[in-house]
Amino acid sequence: MQLRSTLLASTLCCVSLVAPYLQAADSAMVKRGQMLFLQCRACHDTQPSTTTKVGPNLHCLFGRSAAGAADYATYSEALRSSKVTWNRESLDQWLVNPAAMVPGTTMAFAGVPSAENRAALIAFLEQSTACN
Image (cartoon, rainbow, N blue to C red):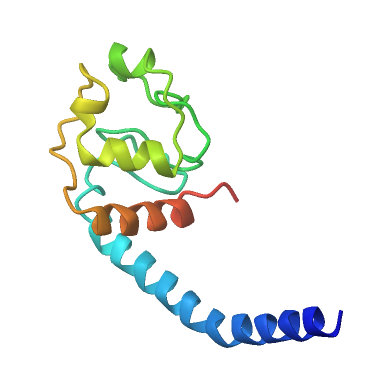
């Protein structure tokens, strides 16, 4: 029992020492994702907006069905029938190559080949599109 308590105390101590570095790394990743999102801003917003853009608004994206933004009317039939729900995994696959994931989509985007860049972009999207 003494050993278990000592191990638990040591683990908590290590976590408290490492946590600020992990938060800084997360913050840096989100900032990188924000920079990467600049290429997406022409077509998408991450916060509620009255402006209609070429692509749907991404506010409240995570957990939403593809083609699920009620205020966007020009989804492709392929995306409407895809049964995709947006989460980290589906966004990662989408960002590799939208046309390969959902053949027939009208989103004209070549994709993000770098897994590191996709992870940063997804981290930014997860934070910036959250429902408040």
